[in-house]
Length: 144
Image 1: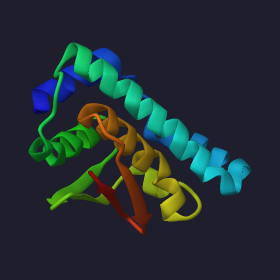
Image 2 (image 1 turned 90 degrees about the vertical axis):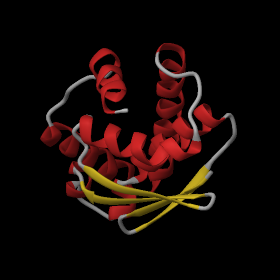
Image 3 (image 1 turned 180 degrees about the vertical axis):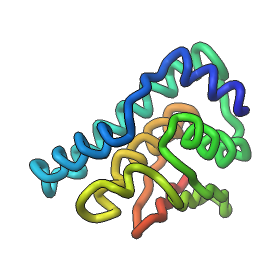
Image 4 (image 1 turned 30 degrees about the vertical axis):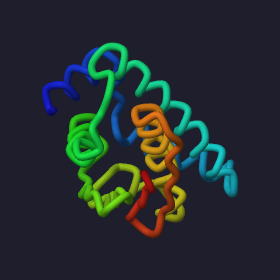
């Protein structure tokens, strides 16, 4: 799985310094304020788009049991830090233990909205059904 994700990031990704991402996102949240939901919606669309490329070029389907490893590896390899991901029945529990997103000024829940949206969009596209999530502190729960 790790090599698959590395190849995807290498061919489809873009490397940006984490300080740049933190500063840009901090400014967006400062000006957008209560519009974190719009950021989540945009991230959801980005996740759907990434999944379409992933399906077309790398894997056309994804078994639910592969999701924790895929998300963990993708998060680490893309430089966004470390996650603990568990599948508990039909709920994916994502605990963000370390990430530049946690350095964003403001509420942790708002800072993690892009991650929530991207995961929802990616998994919705890969699984062929709408998935939704919620955030409480550093934990994102996604019903799949």
